[in-house]
Length: 262
Picture (tube, rainbow, N blue to C red):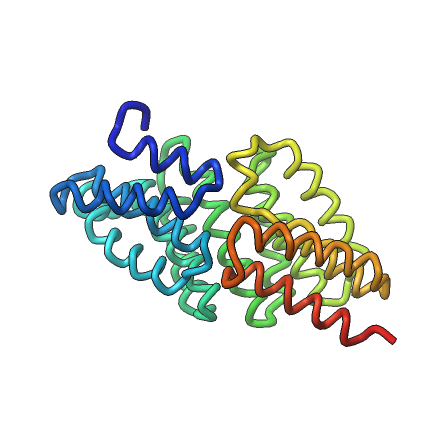
């Protein structure tokens, strides 16, 4: 991206400055021809930044605008197009469209598995993470656990994909009331998360603390769970705003903890 029209928007997004990134990316998209590749990439950055601000329906609409351009410019099976589809599908979970997310992530994971190139293993892992989340959201925790373990076995790199897959595994274990195992997975995810560069940690702000909080609550350690849930909520509110799905999840968990206290 160095020296391209989207370099500033990308840098702002990676720095967690989502409103600025969105504004810059949309300005780039408006300034260029409709089928220009940088206009398409700018729309992708705008969609990411919009979703990060909790405006999930707008983010999905922006992905819908960008996807035909990506397919025309890069090709339907190009890793950039597949990544856009994976990112788009994961916005669906924030809108409660779990079956749609499940179908799309499964399709992307399959396409990435057939593909070649260094980006495909990470892309397959990212799509499987979305699928794990969608399965958990539908209460299909055993299926989610099996898929998360399979994906982790296939993806041995200590990167962001490994972090989110372990968090998905923790979520599936919490859903099965296997809270000690979930706590162990949250601890492993935290270790991996802290080793990542700052720009790779920003999108998952608060996610590790939420995994801890749910496991601790299941173990009847309500004060510890509340501390983790409060930390998750504060971090998500500062990074993403009040309407982001993770901020809402943390707030809901806090209310649940407070409602169960004597």
